[in-house]
Length: 488
Image (cartoon, rainbow, N blue to C red; front, top):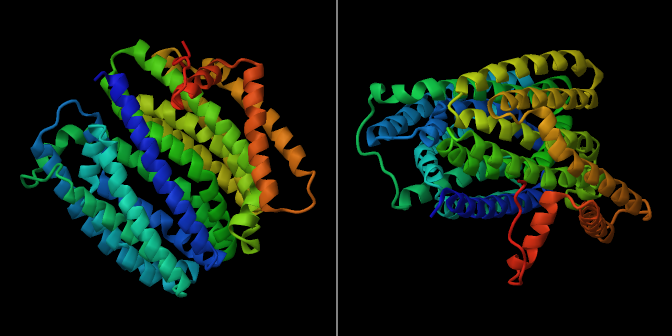
């Protein structure tokens, strides 16, 4: 089987895994939200930065190193495994010890106990990180799909039952622990990799140079991804933080899942062809345009339909989410484009350049936060939009240097789809104004009108990649059709 065939097969399983997992989580979160208040979601958001740091330190950047390294020994894998376990125990102890200080900072005593219990998730994660990385390296997403779905369904049942019984925020804590625990248990039941030797520090050195830079980059990413949570939680209220956090989750659900599907598969594939610049450029361009074709209309539709979506799905207690969700969708449309450019750098082993770029971008983000936070949450979001635009330009600059496919070339490929998404948005917005009240019929009709409008606009202008996908549709349903979608 060729690399392209393996990649497409892995992509199919990864899509199935992510759609199934996140679709189930979305349904569960909608049900739980009916029983919880925004302030209770705000409590979990307050701990997100600490749990995020812990997960990164446990990983140590070694997961990406396992995927990227050409040749691996069992000693190296076993050493990474035990290193992860050692660090996870230290992180669990640290978060438990910090619990009282976190509770004091936010003036929320319950955070101390929440931190102690959630710290157990570090140890659970450490037991499955190497197995997960080996599955990704070998493009075995079918196994990953089964394990993650088992964890998602089990945790969903537990979370919903606890929410119905009135357990409040503890239903979210239990859901997180059960999801990770069942998934890791499935990895161990699967007859895959097992540690066969003990830890040796020397075995980590070949991967440390690459992984440590990604680790530090990840620390910066987690800090700046959650710094808005810290500022909002401290300067405003738990309820406002809950609304912002929920809006951010709605925005991130589609784009981060689309991005993670693409990044997890293509990082392994890009790493295998890292010395073939022409093939790498071709795969990058193909992926970038496909991401734009999907992400732009998705984010535009989410922004236009934000209010009916929140009211129908979560209820009137959460309607404040809509105002935050609309501008966050602009950031969401740029996120996959940033990520795919960075994936090329890491696949070529340039974690040093990756780190340098992250430092520059985070300094910029910090400056924007300092200027905007005094003017309210909306102004902070507008600042995030500015940072996202600049970050995409920075990321694509180095892609231009290495592959001769920089910002202008990328914009030439993706702007037509942005234009069609704007056309679709205008049509959907106008259609929504025909009704006097929000209802399920209006919401469903807006989605259908948006799909038709976007498809018609893309066909009218004969956009190349869209037409290629359009020709493939008959084949997907067992009918005859042309099978090409290349951008070349």
